[in-house]
Image (cartoon, rainbow, N blue to C red; front, side, top):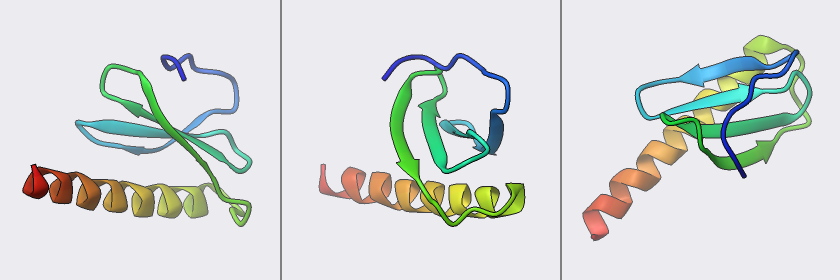
Length: 75
């Protein structure tokens, strides 16, 4: 894992103040924190277009947010 370096064909599928998710136009999504450090990578082979990619990225972000809330509650 490293810092974000844009490449041709990358699409920002999700972005907020804490993270952004880059879709490579195929099956791979890379998740970066606000400083550009990669914090996760995931795949989905059922993506047909950018709209599907955005939906899947938003779902991942929702799950991530819930996980962070639960971690704060358990701290």
